[in-house]
Every structure is written in C-alpha cells, then in structure tokens.
Length: 341
Image 1 (spheres, helix red, strand yellow):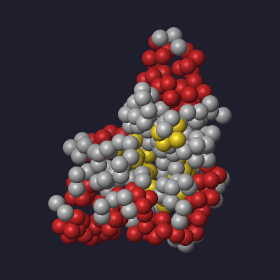
Image 2 (cartoon, helix red, strand yellow):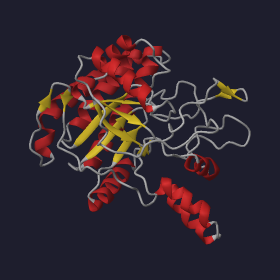
Image 3 (cartoon, one colour):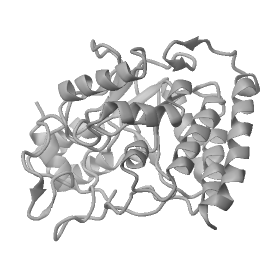
Image 4 (cartoon, rainbow, N blue to C red):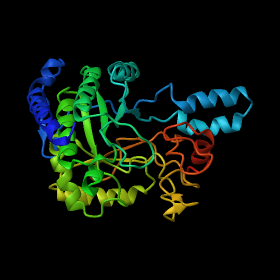
C-alpha cells in the first residue's frame, strides 16, 4: 500500500492516542502526573534498575563455571550482575505477554525495568539487521500491544533507536509518516501513566546539525516524552555525549533531559572508520564496558546512564566469523569485561 493511502489511518491513530493520553492514567489506576517544562513526566521510578536473571551473560557464567573456567566466569559477572535493557523487535502475538512478564519480574525485585522498542517500518535503513513492522498500521497495533503489557507498572522506554536521525538523513521513504508514527507511539506509551519515554536521538558522530535534529525530535513528540536518548549501541565517550546532549537540549529550549548508553563506551570509539573493510561501529575490537547504570549521574540534564545495548550481543555479521545482529557472542563479551576499568 503506498504511503499516501496509509496516512489517513495514521492520523486517526494519532488523534486517538492524544485522547487516550488524557485519560490513560486514570484507566491504569494511577493519579495524573504533573507536566514539567521539559515535557510530560510519569510517576517516579524505583531508583535501582532491573537486573534480568535470564540474561545471556548469566547463562554463560553458569556454563563456564561448570566447565571449570572460574576466572573467566568471574570476569563475565561484570555483565551478568548489571542491569540491561530488554529489546522488543516484533512478534505482535506475544509482545504484550513479554512486556508483562518482564515488568512483573522487575516489580517483584522492586527495580525499574528498561525496554527498547525497535520495530518501526524500515527500521534499519539498509544497515546490519532487518525487520520491522510491515506497515504503519501494523506498527500502531504493535505499540498498543506493548502499552497493554505495561498495566500501570513503572518502566523506562527507549524509543526506536536510529529512527529520528534516519528521518533527518531522509533514508526512509516517507519522513512525515515516520515522525507521525513516533509521535503516536509517544502518546500511546505516555497514556499508561507509568512509562517514562525517551526518544532516541543518535550520537555525536551522526547528525552534526543539532538544530535540524531538535526540529525532527519536536515533530516526533519529544515535548510529550520525558526526554531523548543518546549513544544507543554505540561507543562514544560520556563527556562527548553530554556536550552533544546539551546542544540538542538548548535547541529544544534548554530544559529537555536525556539518558546515555554507556554499555560499551569505556574506551571510546574505534579510532578509524573501518576495521578490515567493515564499519567500525560494528563489533570494533579493543572496546570496554562503560560506567554502571545509575540515575545518580551528577551530570547536568542527564537523567540516567544506562546499558541499553546488551554487552556481548553482536552488532552484525560485518566480518567473517562474526555472529548475526543480536546474537550472543561470549568471546566479545569477555573482552569488553576484561578491559573495563
């Protein structure tokens, strides 16, 4: 179906989401929250992020201990004992249950779960990985299924890594539709009354024109979100991301806050653009884990440092012998942990 024939349904969905946003808190049994100068704010989250006991690093630690690799297992605990995000990449039939189960585990632990939505149509613009919803309508249905899984429980959501920078780069067929889908998704998740939503804004080495990026974030609904996210699945150092985030925040009026993915930025990015003819953003050698996840950042306008990318999951099969995107790679994970400060 061509983009022009999809847009009426998309606009109806956006209007419905805006109406739902006004009453969603009561529907979830929550009292309405106040709106700050930086945008909507959900109820306060528990201060400690959720450590998923089912993470791949935990399984690997157990396996290595069984094999007598005690030293390596102990090193890998630097990952298995840290809170990481759960990525949602599709499967409309099961996503509500997946979200609900993940949040239930976090609630039992008294911790804050972090989710990543990554299912927009054309989500990867030809980079490593593939997938995404087949249409705008399919994505709108999927994001509503995600929201149903929240059920009024606290959660932090990182929305659609790369989606806004890709729109600025105009690598998607219909930029207006892309930004409209994001605006709709912000409204739908905000209507839960308990989700804190951060729109992804890329990283300092991607979109240099922060005014253009801020304008796109505005069209995508950042004023109704809790802020934006930086450095997702990338390696750029925290100081550079803070400076870049301040420039974006200033372009948005100076009050917008943000979160930073520090999962693999302990030694910064690879110093060259390629590694053996493949892009250096994909499984670069010699990298390290970054600062632990925390809300006590001590940094102006930085709400949290997070491990959004799961350390040790491949960025893609960029070179011979490297796993496909999202596949657990224990040797790479061990290297990240060994080089951590």
